[in-house]
Amino acid sequence: MIIDRLENLEKYVSLHPLFAQVLDYLNSTELETHEMGVEHLKDKELFVTFAEAAPKTEEEAPLETHNRYIDIQIPLSGEERMGYACRSDLSPAPYDEERDISFYRERPDTYLCVKPGMFVIFFPEDAHAPAITSVTLRKVIVKVIV
Image (cartoon, helix red, strand yellow):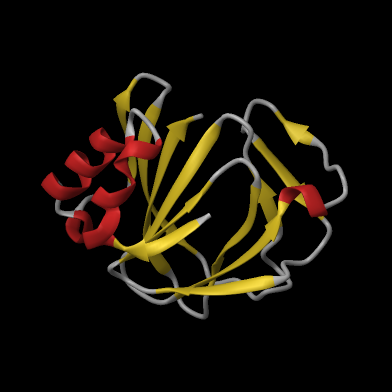
């Protein structure tokens, strides 16, 4: 997992061949005014979702992991708490191959506060519980093939 400010995203482009394209897209797009929906940038390898996340409590936000995609999550309209746990510390969970997601019964052992202007990168080994907030939250979720 990586948490940082958007202006530092360039420091991480060497971690994946598609991260440079992510950086170019984010720098050339008006994120705050973009309409909701999914934008495919490279077939099924790279896509961006502009979404509104309904408020959730810590108890309502399960830990999740993905096998095929790295998540880059960027809150746009408010502060978002995200739970975190190392996947290898969790009990095995069923995997939904179509949606590329597993949900876990365990609770996060760490919580992060992510504000507009920041991002978090979750790799497949990073279990995360996003969208813990008291208000409807606008956010960007970038999915990058592993």
